[in-house]
Length: 123
Image (spheres, rainbow, N blue to C red):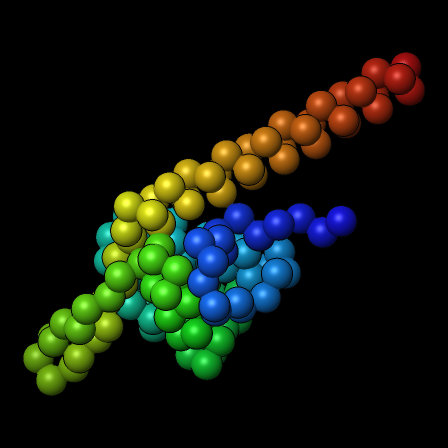
């Protein structure tokens, strides 16, 4: 049975994909929005530095989906002649992020325990 992606729930109609990579991208976006407001191009650059090569046509539907789910909210900010849609985390997004962190820790702890058990039985 494939793992459930950490971020998606609250019954939103938008579904990006259930792949682990998509879940990692969504979790990363929400994580960065928790630190400070983000905008699309900055996230494309940030994710590229982590090995995820995304084009705007891939990232913006993820941002919109996270906003539809209530994990992010956005507003338009003008910086001179440039308008940017800035995204920030919501209380629901913070709860989802904490749940995702908990699931990742749970998975890693179970993996470590399985490795130790495997090592101990081999001795």
